[in-house]
Structure formats: structure tokens, C-alpha cells
Image (tube, rainbow, N blue to C red; front, side, top):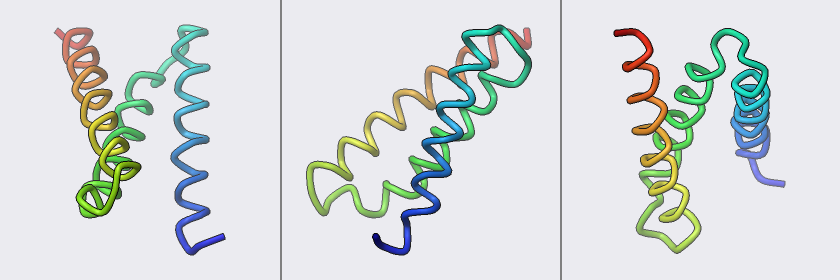
Length: 77
């Protein structure tokens, strides 16, 4: 296990919690998912050119961040 194991697990747990909150309709699920996407994007973007896994993580976190950001913004209007 490398030094990033705990942060990686933290983002995974945040995604799990936010997915459960969204499914149950409780508060802050979308915001937590947006935060998890932002954390994943910021941590994977510097490594995106180093291989397919970081590149896919960067792309998927950007897409999900856009989706959750758009959704949160629309609900606030």
C-alpha cells in the first residue's frame, strides 16, 4: 500500500456516502458527490499523462464533476 491509500479510500467512502444520501433523498448528497469529484480530479490531473488509469480517472472525475455541479446549480435556482 502506497502513501495515497488513505486519501483514495476517503474519496471512495465519500462517493459511497453521497450515493446513499442521493438514493435516500437526504441532504447534501449531491454536494458531497461534487466534492468527491473535485478531489479526485485535482489529485489525478497531474498524473493524467502517465498512463491510462490516471487519464481515465481524470476524465471521469471531470465529467461527473460537471454533472453534479450542473445538477446542484439547477436545484439552487
